[in-house]
Image 1: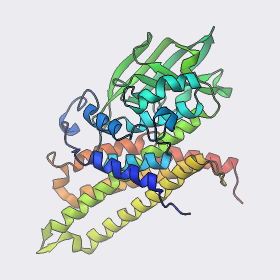
Image 2: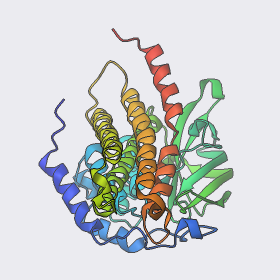
Image 3: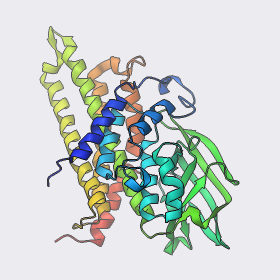
Image 4: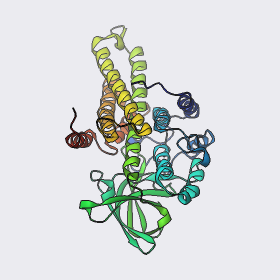
Length: 380
C-alpha cells in the first residue's frame, strides 16, 4: 500500500504547521490546578487564523468555498493541531460540515457550508450517547410531527457545545430493535435544548445536551442512509490522528529530556533500559500511523475490502487508544518527578491523551466491534 501524500495534502499540512507554530499548550490554566473548566470557550483567535488559511473548509467543494480535499488531508492537519494541544473544534466542525455536504440537501448545504468554511458558523457533534458507552443514535428519539421533527433524549460529553451554533445530533426513528438513524442540526438556542456543564480530563468544557420535545424543520434533518455511520467513522479516525500527533510530540519531548538529563556522568538516553522503552513507544507510533492512514484512505476512497471500512477504523482506534496511553505513561516514567511538574507541559499531554483514549470508545469497545465485523464477514 502506497500512502504517499499528494501535493495538496502536503500543502495542507504545511499550512497547518504555520498556523499552529505560535500556539503554546499552556496558554490556559493547568487542569491539575483547576476545579472546573480551564476556559469557558475555545481559542477564537486561532479559529480565525485557521479560517484565513482555508483550513476550516478543507473537505468542502469549491462551490462552497472549499479545497475539495479528503479525510487524509484533515487527519494531517489534526495531527499538527494535537502537537500543540490546539483548543478548537476543528475535528467536529470539519466532519459535520463534510457530512452535510455528502448527505444533506442542496438547501441545507447552501445555508450552512459557506459560512462554516469561513468559520462564521461553528458546528459540533453529539457522538457519545447517553452514557458514553451506548450507541449515540439510540440516546435520542426522533418522530415526525406534520412537516417537522420532534427530538427527545440526552447526549453526554458533547465537545464545544457551549460555543457551537449548531449541534449535529444523531437520533433513531422507530423502535430501537429496527431503528434507522437520522442527523438533526439543532441550533443551540432552540426551545427545549438545555446544556449541563461537564468537564473533560483535559480540563475542557463539555456539555450534557438535554432535548425535551425539541422541534426541528424537515430542512434541518439529514435522512440519507449511512450518513451517521460515515460521520462517526470520520470522527473516530480524526481522534486517531489527534492521538498520533500528541504521541509524536510527547516522544520528542522525552527524547529531548533524556538526552540532557544525566546520571553517573552520562545522558540517561544512553542507558539500555531507557532506550528500549523509547524504542517500544516509537514502534507504537508507527503502528498508530499505518492504521490511521489505512482507515482514512478507506473512508476517502470508498475502495472495497475484505471488511467494511468500519473494520479499518476499529483497528486504528484500538492502536490509537492503547498506543497513546503507553506513550504518555512511558514519558512520565522517563521524566521522573519532572513529568508531574505543573510548570512543565507533559502533564497536560497526559490529560489530553486520557481523553483521546476514551473518546468514541476505548480499545475494548472497538475490539468488540471488530469481532462483530469479522463474524459477519468471515475472511478467506
